[in-house]
Image (cartoon, rainbow, N blue to C red; front, side, top):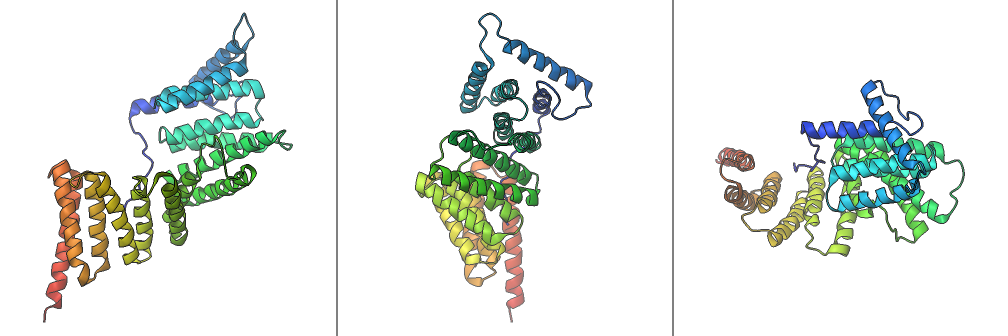
Length: 365
């Protein structure tokens, strides 16, 4: 069975320490705790950040007003995100939360938006689903308890819907990374409905939204695959394929993984021929984009070898052997004979050869 590509979760202890500090900073509101903490040192750190933000917010001398500082922090966050300065971006997003609380108060949708942006950053930039869930839940609570009347303007409504899409998408993908399929599916379904509402409002042209329709359908496909909702998974991945082809062409590298996902779903349904057809498409794109003796070509070749082998048909023995052999040669050339991926390919090939040999012996008169 093909392997999923889970969100990478860093395990470096220094990263954990930095993230812990950032999480502590954000856990205290400007006026009161949003979530109670029993850690006194955390409380002191948060209070220090509070006082710092309040002092900066005071209209002393010619100091910028809080709304000007918020705009500056938002621009800096965007800048650092583009430059892949992950921790600097997160610090600016934390400032956005603190300043939004000063300007709008605890129950305003723009505070929820700041929390949602921070949660999305933890998930996408750092691959930290636990922190993403924590801040996305804070955003959801703020949004659900803070809106007591219709949005003042159509632009506000668009922003609110966009924020809700970000919240539920982040929750869905974060739960998916933690193998919590049910919660993931429920959240992503909500994000899908909200996206549809937003598209109706904007005539299918959504400006400034963090989550694309392609991102959403890929996430839905992955969570359906995880829960064995195979027909739904195939449908969502095919929608993603159409979206990629329409914007990037039919040789986009992103199609490789999508075709592999569809093939995985088809294999689980025992539709081996369809699975092979999709894997051939993935392998063809890979061979066009990478060298024949590359890791990428080795990976797609190995999947094809396994797919042909899985049929159990005599007519596919030659094809299976060819792709197993090509994959093994590519792994050895790219990584060396002792690399773990090379050894795994050898093991897969060896198991199949033993199986075929036993089958041929048993079939002899």
